[in-house]
Length: 195
Image (tube, rainbow, N blue to C red; front, top):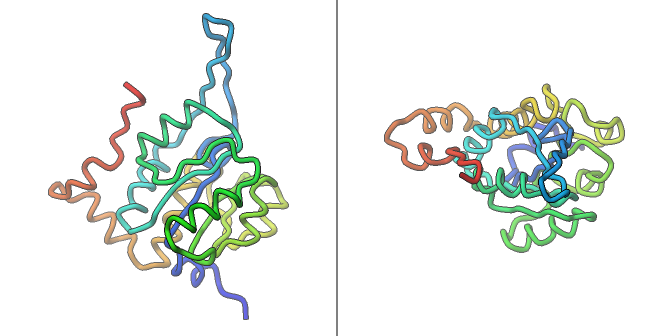
């Protein structure tokens, strides 16, 4: 018997996101620098950032795996205090295996959010495969859950809300986040943008 997406979500301890097309809308802006080299810029959704804070308050261990190497992504990952940051990963299962070894969790306890075919090896094996609304059809066809919003427009937040709702903790972590006395919540998503 196949598990429902909600049943799979109840078991999740680790949540990993792809970046381009998942935490961004997939556009990559290259701005010419004074030295003739390009400066890469991307847009990230604030809803996803706050969602990552909620996920961490809910006990999830969160990170990213991306094929590209980008200073922009490194800055955003630092702002979000992501535990796992893997850039330059052409074969994402290698990073997944490292994360599982570090945490002691199993692949069934890991959720992955992707949008394109490079994500398929992880999505085919993880406990909860999530595709963003803008994902390629090949990705949606293997996903256990498809977000309501596309990447870069709250798709990451949809994934977190889905997991925390299934785990019965979303309302509790929202109240923790809103509690002025909660120091962890107060400092959780204060991004500096490398200032």
